[in-house]
Image 1 (tube, rainbow, N blue to C red):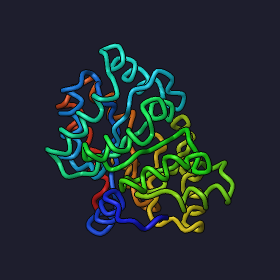
Image 2 (cartoon, helix red, strand yellow):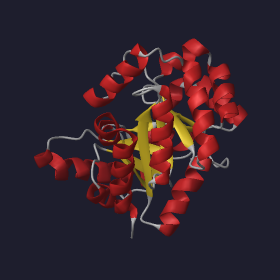
Image 3 (spheres, one colour):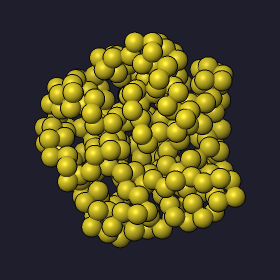
Image 4 (tube, rainbow, N blue to C red):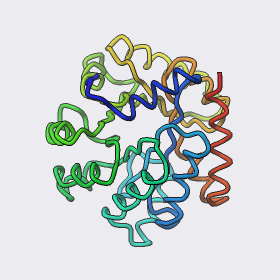
Length: 264
């Protein structure tokens, strides 16, 4: 992994020092409205989330589940535009110290302009991007822009990735590598977990020293289990549903229940 100082990598490493590992919490910006999404992100950090993953709502979120798709659609229906993202990041990072990554599909970044997007995100205090639908070998513009302004870049690795792909993701990611595995039904939990565990092992062999796992994690117990072999656990849909059902109070309680799984 690239060695430029990374706020995200520092936060993950600090969580490994003091607890079992890091909790990464995802929420979309603009859901259910812009002001509430800012308050909800702040509440995540206040409840024990180490790194924020802020979703940029997009009209064709092919890799998101139904809960996140519905939230993104509501944000777009409310009039969400990309400048609202930078406004939100600026306000969140004023209130809390946790690094804020933005999860975005690549099309909105290219439409906005890669260099301009990097400049605006850095100026707002953002930490970098998680880019699920672009691979390192097709991300030269983003790699150059993120190096120029010092932003982290998180690429995804899947159980189906070749060893060469895992090496490339490891070498080009900064902050952590995102290990993703499809979450099956409850009865398939152990086999899905085995897939993630094997993937993390393969990433370690490829040289990754900071790996966070997102596999449909929804309980503190699952967070604890993932942190037995990975550096961080990423939770999305469960937090979005908690916000939808119970507002900021609901998401605050949900984050605290997940954070309990990071304790040694």
